[in-house]
Image 1 (cartoon, helix red, strand yellow):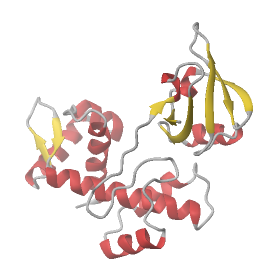
Image 2 (cartoon, rainbow, N blue to C red; image 1 turned 180 degrees about the horizontal axis):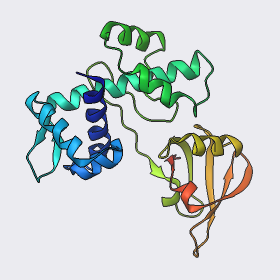
Image 3 (cartoon, one colour; image 1 turned 180 degrees about the vertical axis):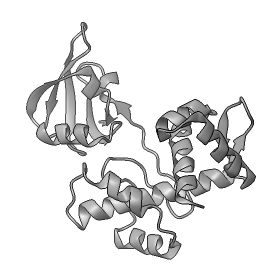
Image 4 (tube, rainbow, N blue to C red; image 1 turned 45 degrees about the horizontal axis):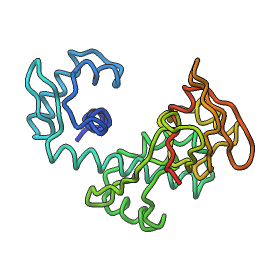
Length: 217
């Protein structure tokens, strides 16, 4: 596959991962920041390779071959992110764009050795699951912090927004994966919340709370 084909597969995978439904060409175009006509041309190519199910004016979904291929791209991306953070001391807000380049390396042997070298991690630095060599994913039950009710407590296990700006904000507020967060109070007017995190109190907006995943404890 070309780099462009891999990027399309990964985008379709991310768009369908949470819904398990077909996605529109417009949704793909928006994610890829390109024209719908360009998406249509690419979908025809991917369909010919049995990587997507595509019919004009209908939704798009990945075939079994397409899902596995997409998972392998995601696997490479997230393993490289772990390597960059753990072994090269990059911060979690720096690694996405670098991993976007490294994910296109073709060597399966290299990626499997990288996986072993890192101790076979199941999550990347942002808490997203890493598929194993067979495409299996270990899923954990998690909730958005904004969905918790008062006096519930959870451990931060991931972020929904992986933008550099959001991750830098979390660093500034000393919110990280593994932080224990108790929801003390939810404001009915704007749904902002007061939380206790690692023993200190903090007020955050609904937007922030809606981008933090926690596992209830």
